[in-house]
Amino acid sequence: MTELHVVRVFCGPDGGGGNPLGVVRDGAAVRDTDARQALAKELGFSETVFVDDAGRGAVDIRTPTLRLPFAGHPLVGTAWLLRELGEPVGVLRPPAGEVAVRHDGEFTWVRGRAEWATGRTPRQYASAAEVDALPAPPPGEGWLYAWAWADEAAGRVRARGFPRRGDGIAEDEATGAAALQLTHELGRALDVRQGRGSQILARPRPGGELGLGGRVTLSEVRRLG
Image 1: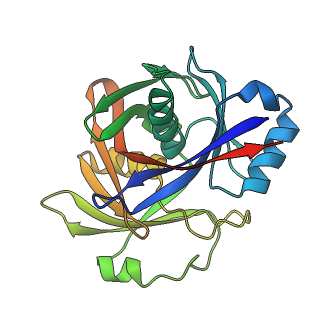
Image 2: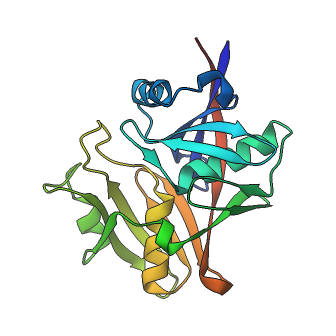
């Protein structure tokens, strides 16, 4: 019997919000790539992670319709969960490359690169109220990251994410890769408040890397099979 851990990633200061993530700790239990994709579709999370080798940090990230080389909320959530399960890692290895991991109080941090966080279009709006008023999803095609300054001096951003890829995910509650992309474009640290109540911290780092941090909490453990 295979266990599925469901966590919420990028929770707000009050514990609310957070993007649900499914993590199959024993990836060997679902070896076949088609079976993995079918399970990710059945679960319906924006992403599901299969841990192929906890010791090496090897992971496979799936949306309901495709495999991702890199994604923020799955990596932050998996790093937090492995530590909770007594198997902490210093590095995760998705297909994109090595992702350094650290823990700082209530926040779990990973590092990525801007070239790994492509495929989403940031669009600035005049106010947070305009972002809040958008339908889910707005008309159009392609991954839209709608954002506005909530407090530009403080680096605080209001954002919402719309995959618009026809996989049943109308709105993404918290999108780490998009926050990294926006941080890279603006060249400054950001405190992103996304969705219904999520918080994402993103920081430029030396050498072209970007740091991504957030709170994670366990929602449930399910039995699969």
